[in-house]
Length: 581
Image (cartoon, rainbow, N blue to C red; front, side, top):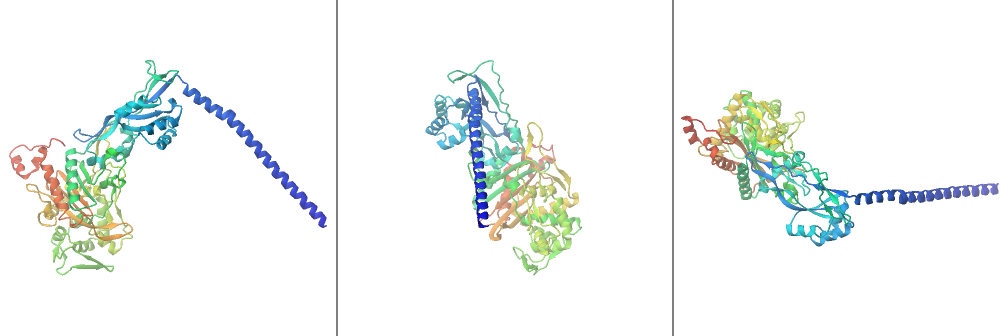
């Protein structure tokens, strides 16, 4: 019995070995067949095709399209094109990538490894470097047949730091990477073409009159609503105030009140668009459209609007004499100063948090949340900037007493600067919301999305104007006053919420939003300073910043008619109209 089992075991092992041997032989044979097929068929085919292509008697060279111009509303060219020498390699004309890479590195065009990496791409026409010095470019042109030197139009930005947060930039290949260059890339970039050449037996090429060409087509132009004079003035003011307060960022927006056209969207620090992306990544995004922040007391217009709709009189007492602290859900709410007894109007113009929390209790969550939606704080403005963000607010079902109390003075909600200025512009426009716009024309056609809707009753808007005028005349906005011009506006000093950290002492965002002339507004303006040092109250920082912007505007010839002294003359004659609308 033991012998039988032993024989059976040996027989099983033999069968297993035979099977393994068969599998090995089969795999070996298949490998040989595939190797033979690859060498004889596939490689032969590709080498043949390559040889045929290289030996063609004609060749097409890339013809780069000139990019469309980006202009301001007056025709000033913000993004244009200049002549430059650009280096390409036509892989159809070279025998050795290594030789070409060596020549490029020896002449300090690009280093050897970078050149090899570019030449190993799938492109037959390889861009190597743009804006090469003329002497070096012409020297390379005569050095090697496959290195192509072309005099072409290359993107150039006038006053790049001033406009970079709006227009963005293109990469070295002229493709839009940021800002309006990115968003409108298809319109701006045009269509590339080619030029056909004959190829001599020695490899040299020449132009033949009968060859077919497909000339490149220039891209279409874009006209912005921006006025370069406003943009430049606002950039310089932002720079001065940002440096004075050692701040992280300063932003100024100027909006044409009746149309929503953006005349300036300036911020500092900025970046140089002519570096084509070789800079500080943190400065690339447009702060006004993409940065969310808690607005603070400038948000109090929302509750004020609800109060007027609810027929609440401005004399309503909202804060008692010794009411210096509110305790809600074991958290303390205080005012910046000891104001004493305050009614509704006084609570607004002196910016009392306690007064507005008490007002919120009288109004209720539903009415306040409804007004937040109506003033478009929870929707995009559709101004035309890429990557525009939308405000955030906890849902009303999850809104606890402390959440709502904070909301009453602008905490617990995040907004963008564009959303904030648009809400104030609704008051300037007698209750009509008009969305802001950055692009006037794209490719000869109007491309901006236009939103116009009634959000407030005209009487409510009038009462809000009166409150905002009183804030500048007698309240926290007194340093926004400008001689000869009536101004309406509101200050906001908000503790800055830092993600994953919370509210940190000493970190603030100061803002002022207003319009002028107060009774018949021409411009609505937002000034903002992110993390000012030493002094941070908006009444001391962004209110005078607003006044400086107004002064610069009324010093322009076509806006001198806005000054109160000129209005007296206008009453007795014909009202002058601004030359540029």
